[in-house]
Image (cartoon, rainbow over the protein chains, first blue to last red):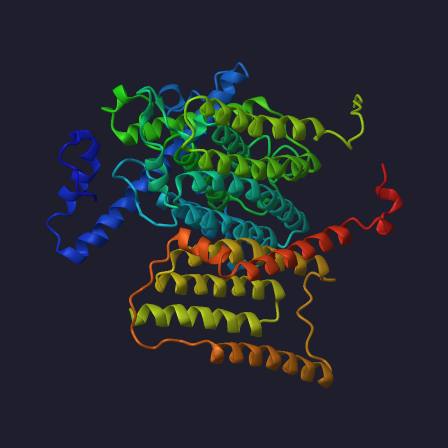
Length: 400
Length: 171
């Protein structure tokens, strides 16, 4: 895609070489279409397989945390379990309620999967592996993500079931609440990098201080705070525990998905995991240096390997959080978003502006810069966190 | 390129018309969302990426939600179609309001100088957009911000009205 390719190791360019070898015989306009198609097919395959094995990894890890083996009967150590699940989902009966709005009921899972897949387009997976290079890539990512809310409403309303409708509105309330901190925590990065392009943000994190510490945004005071806010909001946006109230399978018979069965239900599930992968990929891009290696000595490993490693690590933290934390109550959820995360993200915007303005400070002023930034990150956290529980009465426990 | 524009225009206008003619309010809103997406596609076609994505983020992500919530929270019955224009007075008022809006829009369009001659495409980076918003159009931005803040405060005041608290809601 870019010019200076010659000096780089072969492995870095391997995906591009493979693609060009496949399409080099085609004429020019066809080659462009073929290249795009190959990108789409590769993305679908990679993330489809990642989805399949993520469900397995989740069940395995949850099993280990709860001191049981997890699925281990299908294939070697349960490796074929996702495919067995897929066949089961495909062969299940697809029930549509008689009074349902059939068109919308059918369109909702298609739309949610489509929108969540669209978000994969702008994430830079490697130095040369950016499916679509957009100037406003970050904005595109959040725009495509916010469009999934419409499909959740479609699912709840078209089911013609009052519980599904109420659950859809609850889900929307949660998604809207957490969209704000999610966006606000990405703004400081845009401010610091000075660009809305995802690749530009990754390149802004290149280089190492003293040849050792990478220039990742997460290693600055405002970046760490932003990353925390982004990560918590991402947990909530992808309906993951401890924010999995919209589904709450043990209490709510799956909320807005009550009237869905068979493969349509599986599609919602797939969209949820796609959304989780996309948000983790964006977190890696914004804060964890994208495809950059953590040490200069490790740059011989291809960039996409680094991206995958960081992505998988974040996904494992998602699973770990699910195994550890209990579910929140609805009022705790909204209180947490509006009284804690949003003000924290707003203050953090100021901290990021201070960090950018004091870029030229050196020597002892550098210490002042760090101290002020740290105070701006930790102070509001402590102040808001201590006041978070105020106004709620003392908790009482009763035996059932 | 003109074929793409024709398709985009057809989708935008067609879904807007469907939203207007439909009797089911919620379907109308969803059609309206399609129309907004068409407008975003038009911006994309015209090369204004930033505006296009902002359109999707604001209109599809937020405004459609506001409309849906408004309809769901104010409707009496679930299957009630939109009320038909029962009285002639109501119909006349509706036409008058529509005509007033159309007149204002037409006046604004007529007053705006639209250069027909070809000019080099201005480079609109995000930085430039920000500078324009904060500099030349700063006052308008402030007015919009104040208006939205007042609306937000009004909403909070309405929502936190203690007079409507029912006794069974108290712990």
